[in-house]
Image 1 (cartoon, rainbow, N blue to C red):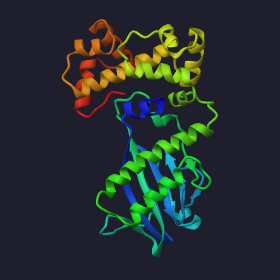
Image 2: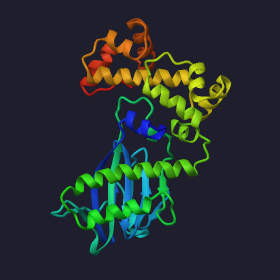
Image 3: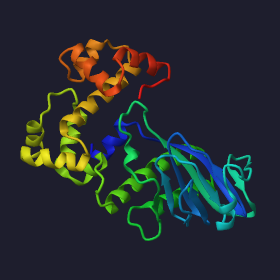
Image 4: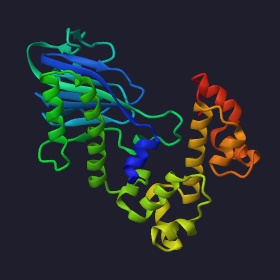
Length: 310
């Protein structure tokens, strides 16, 4: 599995289908902050969007906008409607029988797919946190397949068939991967992130080895040998790309896995410690408390009660 697929899988990143908007003229809707990354794709017409405290942007057919932090924002038919839309003033949407949201005056000119992305809260370093506050990707002239996928979304919205909600949910996941690919190819890597490992074969290999077997006794030397580079090269490139040393990344992956097992299984602390590569419960508990700020037993109780330790 490649680095990007591994990151998405291990962090449990999933798309959740939200509103399907059919809009006419003269409307504005305030979207409150969401628990995950907010996402909008335009299949026809245009929409103006302004993140709270940010500059407005116009989305055209095939465009998509991702707000990785899920911040509040306004959606509107035009700049004038956008300027009047706020938390205190927002047009009321009308729910249509087929589940779509109707906005503005007829006739319908714009169709928008709204969704959001969630991740497993156990994860200590959310994947999308590396992205800029606003990620705008244009469908026109792109070579990532974004426009084609948005067109598929448009077809499902225009003529719903049995299974359309499942198809749309899968397409939302596809659009996220395409958006991340596009960002990675255009971003200049000034900010280190595990996402950038996709572009470095040696670092990507080292990360994949750790992700596949975090309980193994990996060292920079053994990782470098498997990645076919020198120890010095990997020791230099890994933190420059990922933002942390191989040892720190290994520890974080081990403790993320341990946290998930504490929440999801009844395994003993001894079994979990051994599974994630610690020689004793004491060593495991000390490392877990240092990183998570709470002992494993208390973390398990809080996680199962829905109160995750930070």
